[in-house]
Length: 100
Image 1 (cartoon, rainbow, N blue to C red):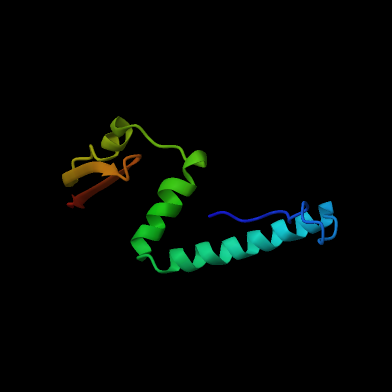
Image 2: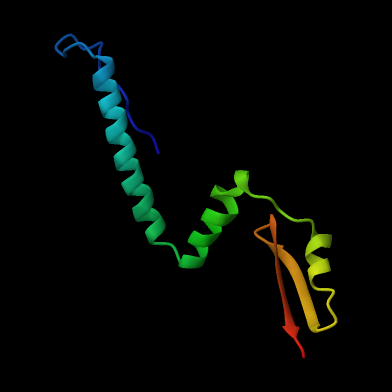
């Protein structure tokens, strides 16, 4: 998405551009961009939104466990048929059946 942040200062019939005018236009563009992104994301299925937010947008602050650590959680004898697989190529998804 591209947004203009200044005006046609080269045009002789236009008034001079000030920093305040550029900042005001920039803030307006931010608001419009947020509305466009919200509208686009709201059309996606919830699962896809979750994947975008937690698999990509939050990634820099995330800590992903090594597979061996996740496997260790499922080494309990009360757990049957554990399955561990990749989720979004950067985290793990694991399930098991609990027996008594």
